[in-house]
Structures are given as C-alpha cells and as structure tokens.
Amino acid sequence: MDEQSLNGQLIPAKEQTFLEGQQPKQFELRFAYKVFWEFMKAFKVLHNIGPCVTVFGSARFKEAHRYYGAAREIGKRIAALGLTTMTGGGPGIMEAANRGAFEAGGHSVGLNIKLPFEQHENPYLHKSYTFEYFFVRKTLLIKYSYAFVIMPGGFGTMDEFFETLTLVQTKTITQFPVVLFGKEYYQPLMDYIALMANEGTVSPEDLKLVLLTDDYDEAIEHINHYMEKNSKPWLRKKLKKVKPAKAPQAQPKAPGA
Image 1 (cartoon, one colour):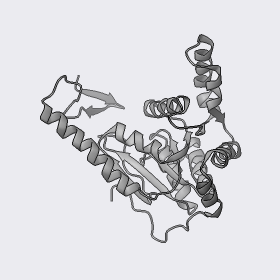
Image 2 (cartoon, rainbow, N blue to C red):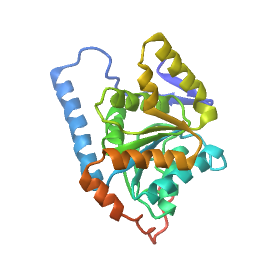
Image 3 (cartoon, rainbow, N blue to C red):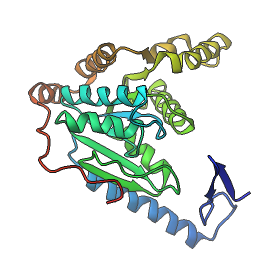
Image 4 (tube, rainbow, N blue to C red):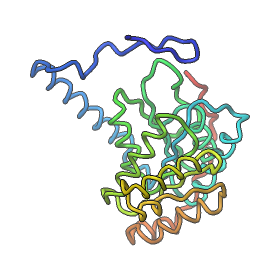
C-alpha cells in the first residue's frame, strides 16, 4: 500500500522512494548533492549555537499531560546550566523542552522535519531548520550535543535513543550521558535491555550507559557531572562564565506563521 492510516487519517507516501532498486547515475549524483547541500545549509544555521543538550520525545503529548510538564522543567534546568536546549522542533515533548528553555531565558533550537502529519514548528525557538531527510536531521541532533535526555515517545524516539546509545557504546561519541526520563514508562525497556545482557547480545557494562530516573535533580546532576569530567578545558571554563540568556522581548511566533 502507498498509504498508511494514523488515527483515521491517510498518510500519503512520498513521491520518490529511494529503495526502488538501481537508479541512473545522474539520479544518484543529484540525490547526493541534495543531501550535501542540506548539511551545508544546516551547518550555516546552527553555527555558534553553543554546547547543546538534545531532548527527544513524542510529538503527541498535549500541554496538560504530565510528560509535557516534565519536559518543560527539563528545558528550564538545561537553560540554568548555560546549555542550549535542542529538540526535533515540533509539538509535544519537543515544544515543552524548547518552551522551558525559552521561558527561562536560555537558548532554544529546533531541527524540524517535513511530514504530512503531526510535525509543525513550535513557537519557542530562537533558531530552527526544517529538513527533508530524516538521517541528516538525526546526525545534526547528535552532532552539537554533549548530553541526551530521552523523554517518553514512540517509534521515532526509540530510533533516536538506540542510535545515540549505539554511538556511545561504540565510543563514536565518548562518554556522553544518556538520561531516560520516566521510570514508569521506561522500566520495561530497561528490563528488556537487561535481558539482552543476560543473553550476551550486549555487555553488562552497557547497562551503565543509561540513567533511568524520575528526578530532575538527578538527571541534571548526571549531565553536569559528565560535562565537567569529559568536556574540553576551554568548554568547562566557558560554561562556568555562561549565564542563561535573557528572554527575548518579542513574543514567540504562532505555529504556522
């Protein structure tokens, strides 16, 4: 089928699928150029955004949900560390984390994705970029961050969590803290990861790569500990001097504006 159903809505497939088999060389070259150009444009937008903490989570939680409130508090506390809060730029958990940072006078960045449903840019962003390709977006959500907070979410959040965790496990990114926030939601997942360790598909030491918590202080202290321990001396010195930026005077733009 070319369409899927989500909550009764039809989700149209993209016009071009890149797994259709061999394509002409000109097509492949054009695709590679589009990917390269998207990287370059994003690099320009994100240059000098400062050290980030990326917050992943579902786009579907509304403002009244407890996890929205939790993500908002996390964004506020990231701002208090003098770090930039980075998210996927959309609604739900992403909006909440950006909002917490924005309202606390911190820096707020969103990396959006073109989708026919769910995803629209939230109004609490100082900088944003909208991507065509998921894999480019995921690369940049990781590239600029020194820590990762995984709030409750669905398939996309799990994809982001395990890709990030694999990079930490393989020391592609070195000793960056990964926080799973929400014990009730994530305990079954941690139990399954423990089963992986028992079966020998991951190492027992890999369980230490993730902090599962419901405590804001514990989460932020875990991030701060790794920042002080593993970041370069110039960055540690810089962070000690940095205070959260003053909240902008202008009101955030409305969604879709």
